[in-house]
Image 1 (cartoon, rainbow, N blue to C red):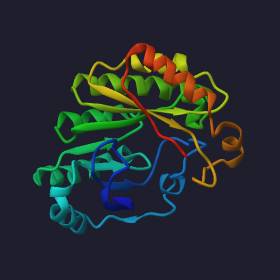
Image 2: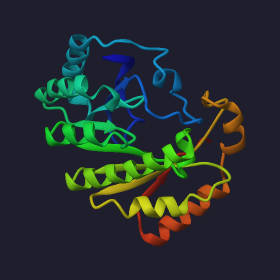
Image 3: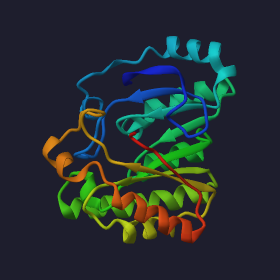
Image 4: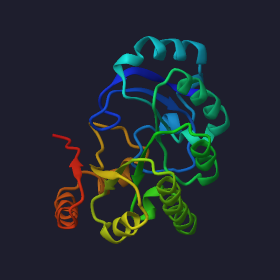
Length: 236
């Protein structure tokens, strides 16, 4: 497996939980705001020392709520990930998977095997945020919706992270996504940010669409009206 590294104790990767977080390389999207794009493109990656990772996880397992796998897109390496997660579960550590939910086949294989306990995912609306041609992005959006249904079928809790760009009306897409969730979830609103806090893949795109303000307040109001639990990540 190719990894960008891991952090044995993190308090920022799953809201309200302590995690042992592993970053895996590769991604099937080209999101212009991505701040992990070097990992996604395999530029800052190296082979995973599985033995060392599991030893470190076992030593600190009493501290963490989840072994959290993120990226990039972890399901790009789903076969190797399946084997690793079997080793994690043998240590009796719950698993959280951060995935874009567009690789539905590999997702179902992991869920069917009982290797995942929690899902974190980004609702990226409009599909333009995928950074790919319109037709491709729309197909990926539909796969994302199918992924939400699959996770719901297995009854896993979801941390639904709604990415908020500046200059887009994302509510129709958000409403569509919410309608496909039939399991426990809460929402984290993530306003897209750029420099100096992050180093986005596409600086020109981010200068036009990062640092929203009004859009955050509008989404808060709509979620409040629906009685949906939500939290807001602030940049200041």
